[in-house]
Structures are given as structure tokens and as C-alpha cells.
Length: 394
Image (tube, rainbow, N blue to C red; front, side):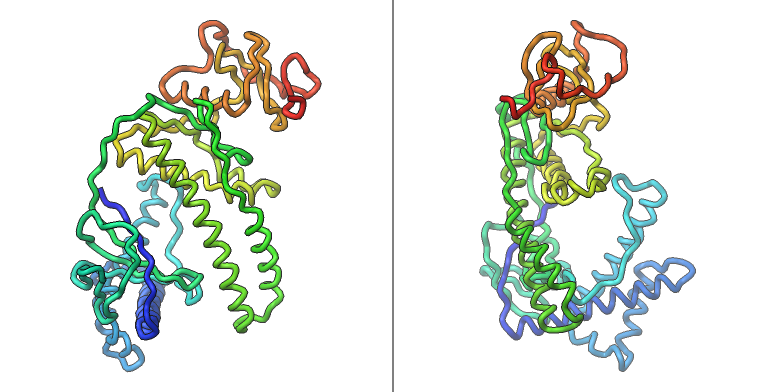
């Protein structure tokens, strides 16, 4: 299977100028080809776009396209062709997952990238040679498992440079400690496992306050001014700090979860619908639930584990995990529930995690003891002391 290995590097001033020229040429080729596709009655393929690029290089207004390597320009056209194919397959229902939008024009202030195929770069003696750029010295945090098939030069919004390699990796088969585990995701506590382990997400409130303050400042500044550009870079650096903190936490948690368990079960959350709540949208977006699910799914495939998701309509927080008694919907402020059937006090999140695990491995919610055919009961009130116990009273 293929994987990406990313390393940061620090180019010289001359290399920064060459990379800026390369990024600009790639962006112009993409935008010109996209405009041509929008004007055409029938979508032209890669061959027509490549032939048009060859003719464009002969024009006096575009002769500077010949000063950079032709491989990244051709790869830009291939990526545009792939983007259109994904868009049409998603619209026709042939592509799984969320809907993919049509390709958009690239901007100068956003993330810049250029992809080099195997014939336009070389890795040797700890350096990476790129055609018409020169030798780059990345910070090798780990060794490449195999020879890369392609490399992408990236400049993010904060002005940092990265090299992203596509390599072939061999899946590692490690014996798991536990048979299965269910995970309930939340906001205050990021993940509650069915074995009782609770993972608390990092605190993003300090950086979040700074971002909101700088965004207000950015809205009052004049466009295309130096001060506005300086504020934009400050906001980008803060966003990168939040994203890297979240990524580090999610990688560590997903790696530990996949290495210790053979079957990982998650609940299929409707995140796009939940972020429509204006009071919880920012808190939900900062957690990265979808990213954690993608990491667990990818690492499970790499390590030979089984990854499953259960239906989002399963009443995991409305059923006792010990006896199967259904007590109905409960207000979010209620964190502990006393079951009317067995009398056991259940932690709301831990009880949901255990139910997620049982549903994922093939068991139903209603056990034989209290199996019945009924709908969900009404919302439980806070005054029902015999049924529930509020967290504040613990």
C-alpha cells in the first residue's frame, strides 16, 4: 500500500525565488486550463490540455513557462483531469463518500504546491535534487521505507516549505492485546473507551481567542496592504499551531487504539449536521472527529485490524449496557443514570461506548432479560431522582 512521508526543509534565497516562479507557473497553467474547460462544450481530456500547453509556451506572453521544469506543469493538468473525473463520478453516484465539488481557480495567497514525477527528481546522500531548482536538504525525521514514486513541494499559508513523498509501505502485523473496543466521541472528553479509558483533547481556547481577535483586526484593515498581509500570516501561524497540536494528539491516540485492539468500533456521527448548531459549531470543529475516524480506518488497514462503524440512529445512550433496559432520551446535562431495571449507576459516555462495542461485534441492544418492541420513551426530566443522577450531585 502507498503512504505519504512529509519533511520540512529550509530553502536558500535563490531557491525561494525559483520555487516562487515554479508555483506561479503551475498556478497559471491550472487556471488557464480550468478556464478553457469551462468555456468548452465538451470536457477536454489530458491529451488536448497538454497539446494546448505546448502551443501556449510558444506565445510571447507565456514564454516564461519554459524557464521551469515541464513535469510539474504536466502534473498540474493531470490533477485537473482527475479532479473533473472525481466531480462527475460523485455527481452521478459512482464515487463513495461525501459530494465532491467542481475544480476551482487557485489563488496566490493560498497553499502552493508542485508535483514532480520520478523522472524529475533524485534522492541521494541526504539531499533531494529537483529539476531546475537544485539540491534541497530536508530535515529527515525518519527514513524513507522505499524509493519514492513522486514528490510534492508545498508552501503553506504561513510560508513554510515541505517535501511530501509517495512511497510503498508493507503493512505490519502486530498481535493485539484486546479483542474489541467501542469508542464514544464527545466535546469535553474527546473519547471514552468501553474499557473505561478516557482521552481528553488538548485545550485550544488560548490560541482560539487570539485567532478571533486577529480576525477582527484583519476585517478592519485595508486590502492588499502590508499590515493586512502581516496579520494574515499571524492568523495562519496560529491556525497551523492548532492543527499540529490536534494532529499530534489524534495520531498518538489512534496509534495506541489500533495497536491494542483487534476490532475498533465507532459511531457514524452526522458532523456536518451537528456543526449547524451555532453554539457548538466551533467546539465541534476543533475536535477533529472525522480526522480521528480516518486515521483509525487507515491504520487499521495498515495493521490488519478490523474497523467498523455503527448506524448513527442506534440508541447507544438510551439503553443500559448491563441489562438492556431502555430508559429513553436524557438531557445532555445528565452524566450519570441509575437503571430502573438492574439498579446499577451508569456513566453516560462509558455506557454508550459499551453499547457501541456490543452493536459493532454483532450483539443487539435489548438483551433477553428485557427484550421488548417499543419506541423510545419521552425525555427524562431532571426531577426524576429515582431514574437519574445529575453529575453536579456526585
